[in-house]
Image 1 (cartoon, rainbow, N blue to C red):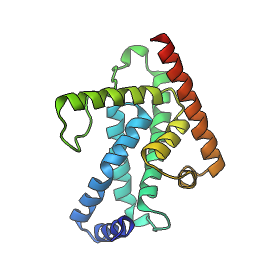
Image 2: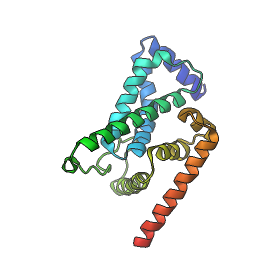
Image 3: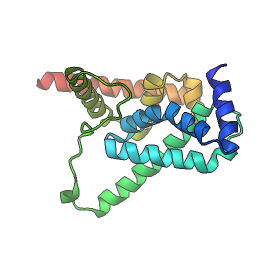
Length: 193
């Protein structure tokens, strides 16, 4: 049974009240949605909030999933929309809040443990994740979303275009523009080192 067929079977069972099927769907996508959210928001707290909002939204609207696209495309579209909403709320709150209210979360204090790692390997991964997050924070939300979907979720430009509701050429342009910006940021950082 393919992943798509298995998703369809789990959705049907969840809609018929199977808590096991719903839990299996959540477990299948929670790590991907969390990591997607982490790369879009830049910190663990917002990524966890985003993941919770996504799964709450999916739970409430699972009956609306028509199966026109893959379930993974549908759930990532929801995640993207919620990340955009979260970004808007954050900007509005930052305008109203004073700078002293910043908590200084660097996004490195906790990651969901999908696999247990040795301490030195986990530290190395956290340091790498921190550098990736710092680099991604230099991009606009639209650029981060496309880089996330292309590199970390391995979607095609056509799939990204469908999710983002834009043309494949626009998706490509934003992706390559983001890569160019990341290269400039990386070169500046190495020049300062």
